[in-house]
Image 1 (cartoon, one colour):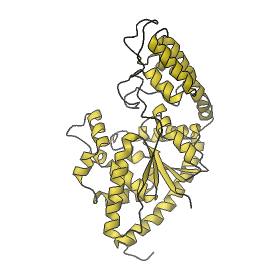
Image 2: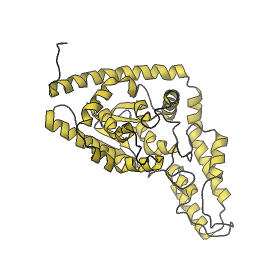
Image 3: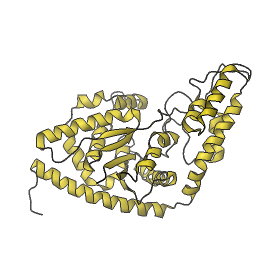
Image 4: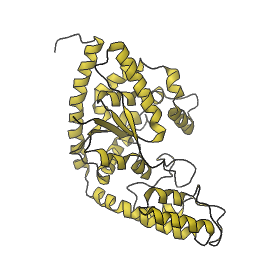
Length: 332
């Protein structure tokens, strides 16, 4: 039997190149090797966007279009909507009893996001607890493998801690621990060089960006502020153009030559930016073409099919949970 893989995204805007190198590229490579579930985490999106349900609903279809356009195959992967699987909310409630508030507050990923969003002492309870919801997602589908970025590794730790505690209390015949599958590419920085590429920070190149938009964003990229003349030696460390060339240019020897030339002087920022523009548009052109052929109706049909399959799995698993916990009251 194939191992199960689960991954997903919050529908809080279009997906970008950081998502592509951090997870999407891996998903396409792995989808046929595993029993693959890909979740649109609309409930988790509400943890910090509770006032925007219509916006989240609209983004669900946009995220599906991004999935399909990069090569996610719905005959291999079951793409489903989190809110349509009520068993996930039920298991989250059970799991909340197996982890302390102090443990959730120590999560470095959550702490960083709380600081970034400026919550201070006004953290929504749902936001603090969304790692528990993620643990329920992973556990309910018996996912042994979860593709994540480096910044999401604490989620895997919390998940396994909760699973171990559940198995200790109720028996080990239900949930299995999971392991992370990380990308070979380090976290992609934003075009401003100040933080990782992010939808909320507006410093990302999106998979759905037109060729002209990509060009404009690359031309705004942070390079080396001391590289004032073409003849000046330049720094490649912290230079976002080279950061993106490392991540996306197919010819690594050519990138190494460009770095050496830039460091000794004689290579201008505009020249390397033009090379990056061509590199990114070569990658994104077929993605744009596939996306243009997708309709909302096609995406809804794929979502319905995937959600129905996920629902079947969820129902069976929660029967096992109820039996282990002794909370089955009526004959079915």
